[in-house]
Image (cartoon, rainbow, N blue to C red; front, side):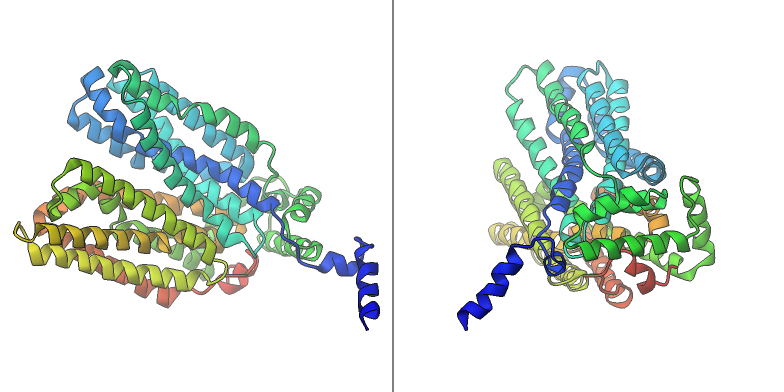
Length: 487
């Protein structure tokens, strides 16, 4: 029997162009490399957001910048990013996803360069404004490109890449702060900003080697180019043909005309006329609201203050624990990347928000139980550290990266760029509100009260996800149109 079985197999293997071979799934790594290259822009985003944490010490000494000015300089980037977030959709629909990523790198080149050469506070703010625009662009365009270039089998993984790269950029900024801290004051902070300039040139050049989004190409009537890209980024030729047909059906249904450039305006009119489109936009905005309103930045940006209130007295230990939180956050995102295409978006989101609710309740209870007493300081500090790590992990294994993944998936093609921009604007506004009110909040209602409030918001996000978010794992982006009735 053995020869009879092996002969056909050997014969088949000698004909790579057979229909059977063409239909077999293959591990296509090309979309992964494209998504990684596009997502590298998120490293620059994380770097630019966090680099002031160490640079501010030296800026204050060198330029005489006050604490109030430092606070505005550090926090205003969330507000500035709104400009980029709102422009990114419009830009990506007209220039294309790829050129928009190049433009984003241009902002990350100009902004830090202005700051590194600044002679005063006005120039620092101008550079921060330019970098902030880049932050808004990066938050929108990297997940959109990753979602549109990926086959359904790996879209969750690849769309999660920007989130892990943002955290990588934050960690690199801490390394930069440490590496240049021993230099003369007038050089140290300037080199911290300048270090983020060099990679932008090489990254922009690399992005130009990537293919354009096949969905954008189809939307512009460039069918042949879209087919070539889909052939390179799909798992099988049959899948490439199916994806192309689905994209064309969506474009035709939207009434798109090649090169007319008016898709965005028509799409926004649908918000007023189509319940399905309104539902999708409402889901995106609500999901982005809950991602930030549940208080992640109160821990990420004020972690040392929280732990100090819980009884950790050593500054060295506080900073060391902050690094632990960063490692836990990045590691959990890797877990989310590995599971999102296997387990699904909905189970991870529910587990994430449920875990956040429980850990926030526990953190509030630590402060409520121990209060200002110092007899049990060690116990309170240990409990607070454990619960904060649990909270950060719960956030990062689900709603942290998947808010971006889910939002980029469910938006219809004609609204994806601009819809993602509006969702990002919501995310940045809420983030700014949380970061600029946390100290006042716990001053008014105590640290325990603040975390109980965040726990209530996290619980509301669990209910919202359970009631309103269907599973999207394994579905093509065009299939979302049927799922949410946005055609």
